[in-house]
Structures are given as structure tokens and as C-alpha cells.
Image (cartoon, rainbow, N blue to C red; front, side, top):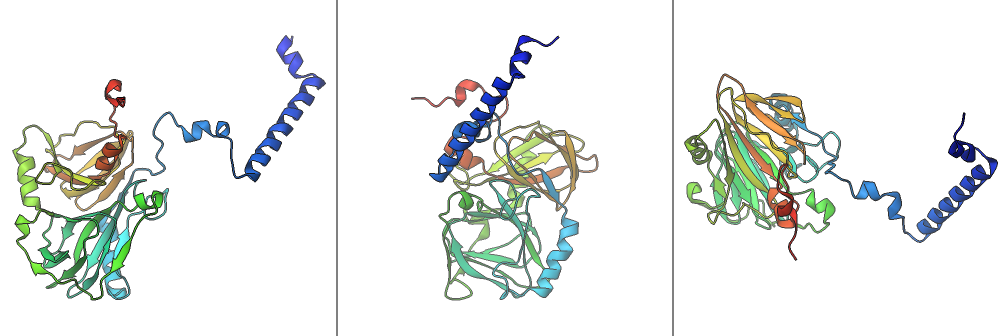
Length: 341
């Protein structure tokens, strides 16, 4: 037996009223769009989601698979044809420049006796040297030697060029805040009038924009416990920039890191060792040279294999999120998230 509500809903009068209501609603939507307006009530849940909903997904880029193609680009594409010979690491759900929704990463190659010409830009860059010797970067008049494992910064609006002496390729991982300039269209680029900006050699170990791997690894090894993490920080203890930051981690043989779920997104690079990372319950196996991304609010935990200690480098958007008041980690006290007034 049908309920009274079902009976009413099936009456001709109710059906006519429903059609009239839908017609009025559609007419209203059309009129609003004619004035370049839209109803928030129709998109409230989409524009105000209850949880972070990144478009980017976790993904890993295998170095041994990509490297041959990068080297082939070195044979086919001259430095004159490409201002920067870079293979961008593009998230499968996005277009360039998105490695995550907020971070860009790419593998850059410079061949012997080449110069990546001098320019400067608003975007901030931090570079992790993957392989090679004899490479250098000149940042605003100071020429810095590239050493495997080092992190070298290119601060905003500093003239910079890259070069390579000796034999063999020079490859590094670029990390930039380029996605910010899709959201904030305020980026500038300027090219220098000559291939190289005038520069002098400096003591790399004393440069404030160079973080030698030898020092970072020693600091990680000095930490107690089966897992250690150290941030890359300026001499005053602040992050390396206001938009991007970096860190390195040590995971002892057969051990793991704590599980983390945070609003910051990150790009990881495997410096030494092998293992896997659980991201939202899915396993991503990695080894030396691989690079992978973890978008915002994806729970993750790193595990080292039983052969050797693993060392990971990462860069992230944590400084930007903290400055904006958007950084949050699972388990954080709700009271700490309230903005005082």
C-alpha cells in the first residue's frame, strides 16, 4: 500500500508544480549567467569541500627509465635551441608545470662545454645535484661548483647561468614554485645581454645558498633513533624561501618513518638506498635516483629495505602554507587552528 507522501508525489498536480519549479529555476540560472553571475548554492559543496581535495595524484618517476631519453635530448637539442634542457615531471592528472598542485619539478641536463644562458625570474628555485662533476652555476656574480648531493638555491630575481667543464653529463633535480604563478599571474623573466653574467669563483662550502650533502648526511647520522629528518635552513634558522622549503631524511635498514598526513605537498628524491612508501595504503617502490610526489593530505610512510640505510631528499610548499595559515597536520589540536582576534 502506497504511503500518503508517495500518493501526493504521484498526483498530476504535484508533477505540474515540479515542472513549473524546475522551469523557474532554469530561467533564473539563465538570467544570472546573462549577467556573468552564478549561484553559489549550486556549487557550495564543490567550492567549500569538507576536506582537502588535491587534483594531483601520487606518482613516481623512474630515473633509470627517464635518464636515457634525457641524454638523447642532449645529443639532439643544443643549448642554443633550448634555453634550459629540462624534462619536466608532470603529474598524470595535470598539465605542466604541475608536479603537484603547488610544486614543479624537472630533471635538467648540461653537457660538457655548454652554457645554459643567463636569465633571472620571479620564481624561486632549489636544485639537488644528482650526478656528474665539473658542473657549476653562477648566481648573481658568484660561481659555485656543483657536487653530487648538494642543494643549491637560486633566489628570486638573481641572475644565473649554468655550465659544465670536463667530460660526462651534469644532471640535477629542479624544484620551483612555478604553479603559484598560474594562480597569481605576476611572474617576470629577463634575459641577460650575454650568455654568461659576469661572475667570480667563490668558496662553495662557505656560500649561504649551498647546502653540501656531506654536512647534511653527517647531521642525519648524528641523530638518534631509526629515523631522522632535518630541514634545510638559513643561518638564522628560517626556511630557505617563503614559498619552498626542503628537508632530508634517514631511514635505517629495515626501519620506517612515522606516518604523516599534512596539507603540505612534497616531491621526494632517493639519494641512497631502496625501499617503498605507503601513500594512502598503496605501495610505491623506489631506489636510488627515483623521484616521486605526495600531494596534499595523502597519508604517507617510508620504509627502507633490509640491504642498506636509505636517505631521501624532499622539497615542499610548507613555508608558503605556514605563512598563509593553511598548514595543518593530522591530529593537530583544533584550538591551535583558530585565528585569534
